[in-house]
Length: 639
Image (cartoon, helix red, strand yellow):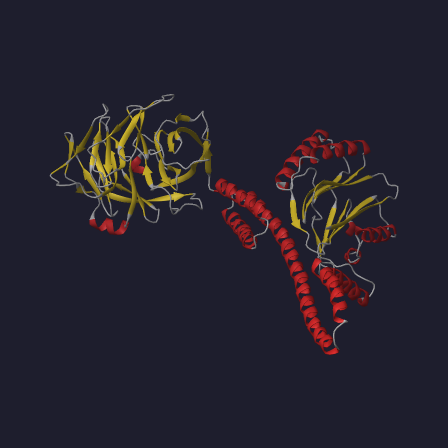
């Protein structure tokens, strides 16, 4: 709880002083100090400030709302400013006190001083900081027992630091202002001055004239807490009945009962005092946690202001999260914590370049696709979806019941796993048991063989380039190439040299645009070329976000690209990641730049297909959606 008082020192100078203290909401106060030589302009500015502030500042988004308000106030100030500088001698302070956090901005020669608990005096407005518009916002906590003194003039031009410190040591804000006023009137001041004093009295025990009175006051307070409860009142009533019965008994029985009564009374007294002290501790925990919540919000605000500075952003987010989880362990302010965690998630997404697409009707291609669908592709300009044993399609917008073709020759223990679109217009599907199935454009299934190979190698992924296919072995240590032969393929040959398989280690996924991108276990990328000579190039990835890691329980990771595409795409953590190569020619690529990632706002993406750069099809449990994006200054923006 803050003790606040304001005062004007009017020595009949030309400058006109206005002080306003406005209650905007519970625990949300506004302070306005204006000093101007032109009363008419001052009144116009004050009216504009009041109209802009009142009803537009929320205690949950104070910094952002205050920043927006200052922009509107600046717009008015600029209409009064020209090359002749019409506004002269204008000094303004606007502050918002949200519980114990003071957020403020200023123009001109106003001054502000924080007097800490150890009497250290800190100038919260720099002396040379004379601005003509609200260009910066400052914010900080006023801790228990600390004092803030605000003034329309530079108090240290007339007073010593000890004058301000001694005034701040007085118990009441009214006495502080009165003392400062008396000192200033004895000085040779040259202007009218407005002063606001405020003290945080949250845990300050009122001082008595003497120590004895203080002790008596505390004892009286404790006594009231001890005896003003239902247990004690009931016990007193019962004791009166017991006394009547005891008075009729023998002396020995009376003494025995008296001793027992003393022990019981002592026990009850300790229990009650313990309860009072325990409640006091809980109350202090609640108050401290409330203050820490504001600190967490401050850390989030600073992080939000430093999205372009990864180190500062990360440091402040970690501090905010530490506070949140500490309070969460105490099971306090759970609703507030939920809101703060949501805010952290939002700015983390902004920091990491995550764009969320709305699953609305405008983007919906079809909601008639079975929830069992796991993959989507495009064959002959039409969209198809795969389930564990069938192909659905073609899928046309507005179509009520797209056709579904089940492959009845698939073994019960087998299921479709991956699929690619071949250059002849068919879909080649790999299965869990490492078989290949061709689905033709006329909806016909057939098994596809490797000539000269008894069975297909165990494969984790298949890709295609021209008419050949490339399989990633299940253990992730080799890529096998199969050349096209008629309706089937030749026996496979290892694509990577033996020494390179050891250097690369386990491969998570591959994608082909002429060379083969390889995503390694540590999420670094290399690229393999077979012409004009066999070689492997390490690919540098620039501007990687903090969340570049595989989350447990997410969908399988997969790289995607094609010869005609300008970007490399990565499906990871049910999000679509987009990277821009440094060169258009696939053989000249030396680095990738991360430009953003896309997620579903409500539902997780299960798979996606790249129709062309800037236009994707995304599959989730509700259907298939079209996503459009553009890239500006190496940043992905949803359209």
